Amino acid sequence: MPLAADHVFLDALWSMIVFFAFVIWIWMLFVVFGDIFRRHDVSGWGKAAWTLFILVLPFLGVLVYLIAHGSGMAERRARDVEQAQAQFDAHVRKVAGGPAAEISQAKDLLDRGTITQQEFDRLKAAALAGNGGGQPAGDTTAVR
Image 1 (spheres, rainbow, N blue to C red):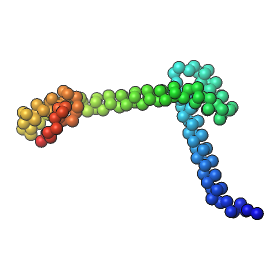
Image 2 (image 1 turned 180 degrees about the vertical axis):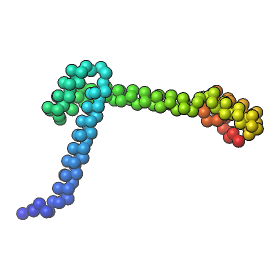
Image 3 (image 1 turned 30 degrees about the vertical axis):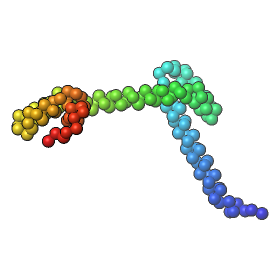
Image 4 (image 1 turned 135 degrees about the vertical axis):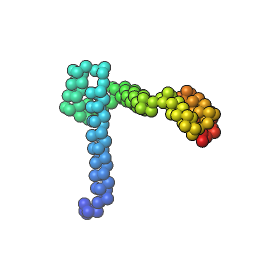
């Protein structure tokens, strides 16, 4: 007659599977609720209905929401990421000062004699090209 102690590994494995399934389930709840409340195309009553459906019948509610709105969730998430990246890029450009600041810094270096006119022209061309790397696009020579 097998004892429970004979299957300790299988019990531990099953416990781990159940635990990870529970973690995934909680994560999906957060993702679905986040998507519901972030949507602008659903009215307040629609959001309340989805929330009530998910709270009353959690497994069925989340599965129905994922089936009905899964592709829309991915599109909304991709659009949010693109908007966040665009805002970040705009902020970095604003803080960095843009091409005018780069040219101004290069002009200061030229006036102090730190760089030559040729190097200034190269830095100016790079700033106007918008690559911000200190070199014109396609130029592989290093600025000294």
